[in-house]
Length: 407
Image (cartoon, rainbow, N blue to C red; front, side, top):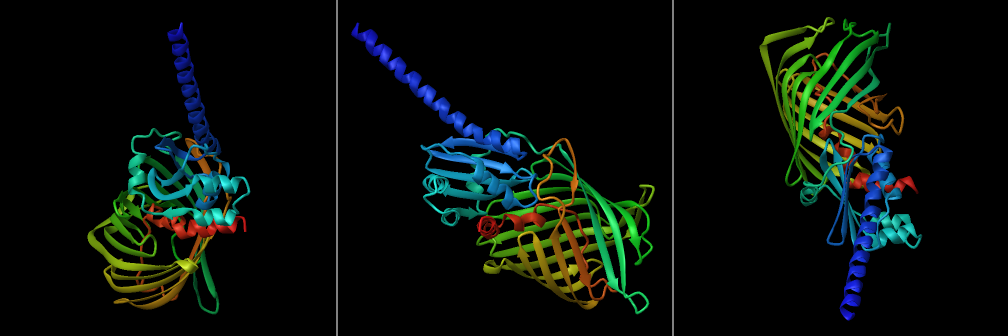
């Protein structure tokens, strides 16, 4: 009789543990459901040794910090969790981690800790090697791969003319095409449709960029982008970009190497190519980030497009998604100065990513060079890639932008 009572107690205890465990797991799994319903992709989550881990990729919000704010505002964490680690990804590659103590999170949710104090307590870091390994065997929910995005936007180019026509302009409508095939692997294209042109004879529809690229992240905050295909300025060939971040985003070493020939698609989608001339691009430089003001000061030296040897000094101020910069160049082709400007356009939040999605382009870019005739320090465009978007993931940008959201 005693044996039966003891056995019954043990069984009831085990059943209770199983039920409690199921409730705990279901509570954590609810976070992945919330993120997927919002349209976030590559979602992963698990619990280990009293800590909770969550990963996601944002292709819904224009600004990365808006997606992070949504995540922090909508996830719920069980009381038995000590610390929470969030991994933010791009093209299936882990970029930056957001780590905080669950007690601080609960205190913020319950109004005991202010929003500012909670954000100040969070650790933001580009050093995610260990965290990437933890997610390696975790299954992905709502993958971002094999989906097609078609952003549509406008490109404006201009230069200062003579007294009869002081400003000459060229306006192009440019639908784009992009699809991610695997971690860091993307097919990207831009189709150019002239709308208004006072500058040159480029008045026919044609493919401006058509390339295959691979983004790779190595240990110790090293990134590499390899691109193969047709680029802007009628270039085709290969191009590689290497970035090494030192002390988070404070200092960056960058190296560019390209081998291209003159080649482009004509109006009938046929390739026009000059196989005789091969132009190498070999650039190296350093970028210092003045974190207090979200400002980059960069210096690059080497061989630019068409074997133009010299340097370029660039000063860029970042204010959220708006960038304003000044630059000067001195090369074997001459000297020049100019400015560049980038501002957000379109909608703050896109439709949920589907197999096919048409959306507005996220940015309007404008560059002015004082003397374009000699193409001083000119650089062709290989298209968007992970490295061109990195500044949105900088720890200082995420932290300062979160503080501004609810200021």
